[in-house]
Image 1 (cartoon, rainbow, N blue to C red):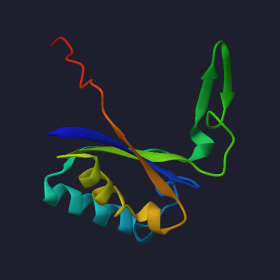
Image 2 (image 1 turned 45 degrees about the vertical axis):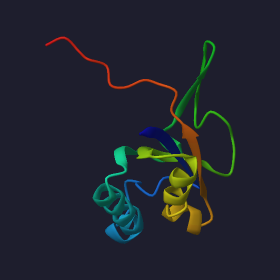
Image 3 (image 1 turned 60 degrees about the horizontal axis):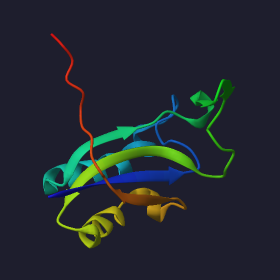
Image 4 (image 1 turned 180 degrees about the vertical axis):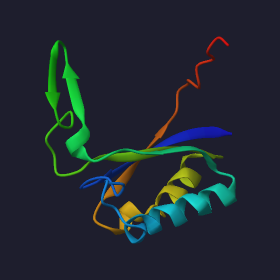
Amino acid sequence: MAQYAVLIYAGDSAHSAHATSEDTAPHDRHAEELERSGALVAAYALTTRELATSVRGDVVTDGPFVDVKEIVAGFYILEAPDLDAALAIARLNPACHAGGGVEVRPIAGGGFVQRPA
């Protein structure tokens, strides 16, 4: 089955140091639903934009890579039979209903790196 990366775009991460369970509840419910469906392969919430550090060539700066209204707040990998099915799943992401959105991209390859014991 094909794998798709779902990049979550929002004003900032819902997982700030001061986030309450009420702040993260919609995202937690969505993750639980994806787990139950069997589509979720992996998921990662990112920290807030203020903790980002960007590198361009030899220049290191504080903040996201580009100065934009919305940043990548997290991402997950799901399995779906085709892009239409992946889009149907991605549309359910809470960011899509709270002023943000998601980007869905087929995964070309990769995986976890095996480390020596």
